[in-house]
Length: 465
Image (cartoon, rainbow, N blue to C red; front, side, top):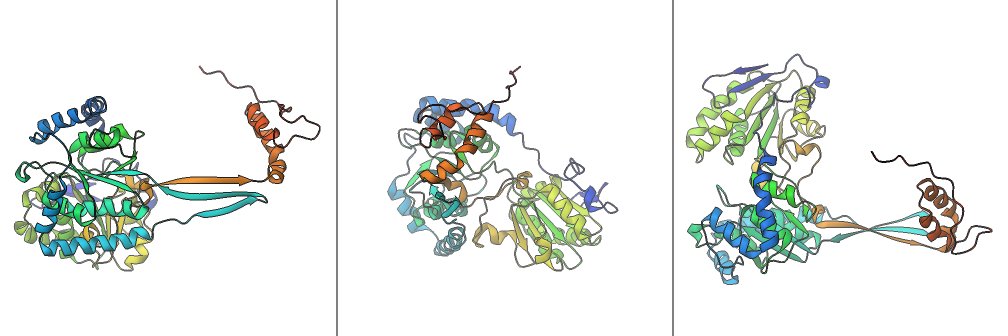
């Protein structure tokens, strides 16, 4: 049940009281909870020719699309080293200090994620070791739309460095007001982290450049970083050519709150996400029926002084809502069905409530853990799954930059011991040469080495229609 609350920036109340948690499923709430529509498939149709053109013509295509979409005609994409050094030297000392500390904290968190080599012995004489090997090269995309995002440099580069990636390139859109270079803050962040290869390229053509390579940019094994719908579409197209972190869309926040929540904190955090994008989604899920009105009052107080007021109000009116539930169990069910990018928990026993969350990109526990902390200085990553993909996708970490390589070593006795089971499985799948590759090493009793021993008859295979 939804209702309108008049002049409030958040125009929708979704009353789910009287409904048990078990019935508040993703299917039951489809179309009920607000979220911006994002037609990635339509964008794929527009972006696919761009990616294919870059694959065929390389840097020449990149130059043409940069002139068309960014209004800058660049003979080359590579940012000169002196431009990086100048940007770092000119950076506000307070911003430099904040980026340095953000990188330090992110490095602590991401280095702790590194898995350790695992050596196992499934059977006597057989060892299987699991190695975690970094990819050779990563391409990092840093958006440059409504605002500059030097923090996204930190969030993408630091986990790649922690994983041990030896070659990291960054791409960010050229800015006319910056003389055709990416935003100076982005360049400064790259220089601060020791990144020397930066390309002035934005949008789908930047991702295609990373995937296929050009004369100035070698192809990358993995591409990471947030962006608009066209960047998401390019990732969908290029997945398989290169590894992809996820199709990150417009930002979103859910807040689970009860009677203990401070409405000023809640309102400030809703605005904090809404100022990102007119398509940002904001959801307050509460067991306190009086909290929406109190949050409304705080919004009315805070919004007039908000720098990006129009953008925030558009988001709040378009993709925001107050959800009323009977209890915290029902609130958690609603949250898991929506699967937010960011989740804040403002309740009694907030840590215990947070421990019950299944679907969220990142969870912020208690009144003094705002999403803004995670955006910049918690050390966690702010590149997170959106659009409900937190049901199956994780935020950025060291793992997209690592490959699992198994190393198997077996002695003769162990192979001989398991050979009858290879006989059975190879026969069941009608792959006699698989069996023979084992039996040439450890012949069956009475069998000739190198021949194909008798194997159990395979079941007839169904013919394809």
